[in-house]
Length: 458
Image (cartoon, rainbow, N blue to C red):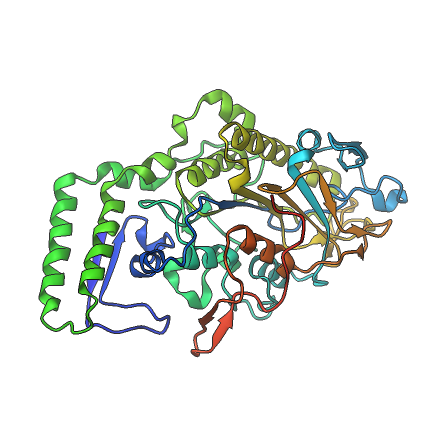
């Protein structure tokens, strides 16, 4: 459905013109503000590279010991149910439940020393996704824009006719949509485009059929004559306003309008979201569950020109039964990450895509005795030691930082969430000192602190 809103010239509280707002199926949610992105491109503010980011968001908080910071020499009530295994990089180890990671460690950086020292799901998620402390469990609204929303605002999509920022199947954090993956005061145009909120928050062992994105139906069912008539209406409405527009911006607006119309008429987005075009054998390598399915779709999207994709992989809050709880989730992550890196390499995209695997915090190093009603050992919240995987466009085969012998806290190169995001912004050639007005009009920089991690990016 195409929606046209028309009103007097002027600027709203986010600094965007309200003169003509165009929505075409995904456009209103895509991160492609009609005027903003195209103006930035015209001014040369958006780099012309095709770099992009895929974030695998492990909502709930995965354990550092069961993933990227195993401690096989720790006491039994710390080290957990799995041993460590060697990788294809000498001296680099990973949990034995991630054997495919071990085969691709030369394309990976294990960052083991991130911390924010907060065990609140909401505070941790906000901090990891925005680089700033802000929201908490007693004050839920998002305070600062997410990394994906800043990418949509500053960089936009790498190609026309495609969203800049996509959530698969829907971007969320701690059951909130879009949660702390949203745009906050940047405005709704920079929220992620969610593919399917009706079939979302899917566990790794979800077995029902995955519904194709509804946008495919919308694109397919849009009759050419209907689209043409709506574009004609838009043109007529613009002409009505020409007599009163004294800003001198009409020529530019016409150019932006033409490019926006190409998003409606082109087939790039429709093709990108359609995973049925992939070889079934490749889909098998990613995994046939939802996590593999949407990781494959993420690769299709960045290949088509999306700049930032988040893949939701939830349900990591295993206070009880860490072996069973993490045990059914880690193999699908292992498959999806390995297949993604192989796929990017074969397509010559490996240096242009930064892959991130992280959640809002780690888990308590000492295993507990379970929780009320489920007296099976698990791990609680722990923001003092968080492991993050960076892969793809990095100098692989590295371990950054270290925790103590029980994975309790960093002892070498302690890092904050802002350091991770500063690294992301450097990869995408975005200046984190850029400032945007909050709801009160006060300019707020993308990051207040944090520096790119030296020696990580390719």
